[in-house]
Amino acid sequence: MDPDSVEGLRASGGNGAEDAIGPDGRVPHGSSDDPDLLDFSANTNPRVPPDAAKTYREAFEAARSYPADDYPEFRAAAAAFVDCEPEQVIPTAGGLEAIRLAIQTTVRAGDSVLVPYPSFGEYAREVRLQDGTPEFVPHDDLLTADPDGHALAIVCNPNNPTGEAADPSALRAFADDCLSAGTTLLVDEAFLGFTDEQSLAGREGIIVARSLTKLFGLPGVRMGYAVGAGEARDRLATARRAWSMSAPAAAVGTHCYGQREFVAETKARVADERARMRDRLAARFDVFPSDAPFLLLSVSDADESVDDILASAREAGIALRDARTFRGLDSHIRVAVRAPEENDRLLDALDV
Image 1: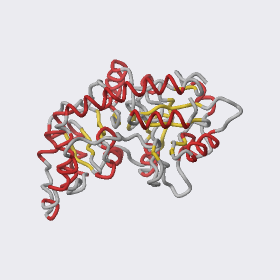
Image 2: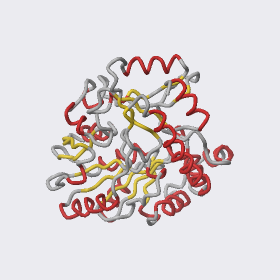
Image 3: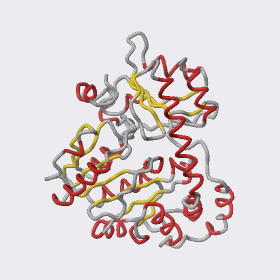
């Protein structure tokens, strides 16, 4: 399969895990809870900003009282990072809560939603929880789809698990089409902070979902937010839970967004390591182009299977992401881009 397109994905349609939702209704995610494994299944930064732990500890006393529900410091820091107005920032306990809030306030029973595939499985799940209907579109065709008649269109930028960022001009043109059609556009920018692309935060007709989990390596703190303008912002603000972010999360998030040198160093490291890893991995796998802190690998050799590769990596003390749980993928693995010495260990384990 050509890793520069999704033609092979169209041919395969779905996969064994129907729409990437397990029998208990939950969506499979990366990350290993085995402390003895080096985790390449989750796409989080292996490093955290300086003094993040100190900031968290110092917020303990504040956590003994309810936080100020307007979160002025966090909103100002987030707005400065994505270039929008502070009042447009709606704090949430992680990026997934921002996605849920956006879908809850936009989709009604019977509504149709344009959903990319292969992409983050939670989109379809959240649409179905509102009794909406996901209309699946290959992710690299979504920006040329007709949004008319749909309550919502969703774009993951960069796309997970394939990794490529949307063409900025095409994305903005699609945003204009959505606005003209009266269709809200939800842009999940969980990984955009690893690129030099500008956020769409604050534009009319668009809801942006952001997470601090990936860029700052702190998934357990649960820091995120939605950004909306006009009526979308009002809906988000009205539906948001009171005290939607803990005091320590707000303090750490504010601190993290002030660490511009850390962000610049992270982007440079990820770009360098991603290119190095792709060159090595291409000796054994079809590797998709990526602008994100991960690489999608297609296992095309008939003599080996995804299960064999996952098992051999685990024997070497490494957890990989079984990407067959994504709609349209049937022979794929996703690997994170971590620190150089950890990446060397992965490459050695995969014998590339």
